[in-house]
Length: 404
Image: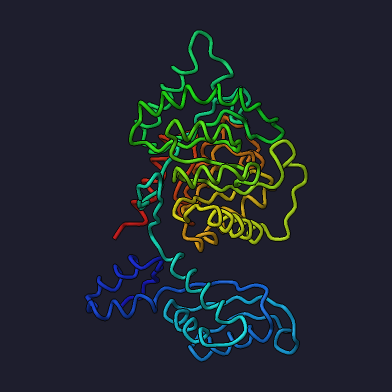
């Protein structure tokens, strides 16, 4: 006789364990939802609603954490609920017929349960639907002279054209496994200044045309928040607009995205690149970023953009302290509730250097560790400088997590 601890991370994992002991197919179908345990916080609800939820969970054989004052006073409060998938779905059924805000809570929790358990997400780009089953590796091409990572193609090109160097870099990245390229013609490093739109277009468009002709099946995104640049890029066939302002700087870009049905990365940033790292503060960075996504998704949908076109980026290093970046990576799964691909840029970021006390040129190992953890937490597109190493790291991660 032996006892072996098991860790069930998802439905496929549970099916494997139950099938291994020859459980019946019908039994597996019943047992899988019972074996998956989930935890959610529900914030800013009345103490009455909190107590109703607690009583329902107790009746289902589960429970929730609740503030002591919420048991005896009428206050606004937050709770932490937990239980198996079966228990939480039954909770939603019970709350659906309840008064006050409970029906709305049930509806939102149902969506969260569905989205958080998905092992793949879809993305609609120019009328084509992509199903993302494994992480997309997105190679970075910087058409700048002042990139924080030191790889800007305008920095030192003696005797070599920018076009030739960009094409060489892109070919190398695609050969190494990148299935997406992100092109930027303005640095967004902390303290950087904006580039005039005319200059940004002049840097970007010749390279974009070149790469679009060369790579028909590779996704190409353009990193810009300026309307005229986005319009020109879309007219040249770009697939995705990667807007570090989340469409706040130039809301008119939303109409372009709606019209041409391109993808759109909505990134969270506190402030602007020039000043974003001047003492940023958050009461709760996870809640703040989640609220930002909620508001921006609503804006996009009101502008005619389908949710399937949207990609969410928590903005590592954009108006964040070291501890904020660490929390965002550690709790990245919180944003799975939106059901959209999570895009993340960790490569060579300053928080790695701050923790390890090393320069940009030595941050690869730290970036790979953080990237693998982000993928484990739900990242589906990772923006990187070092494609070869990242592809290898994520392949090993996938091989281990899919081992049976």
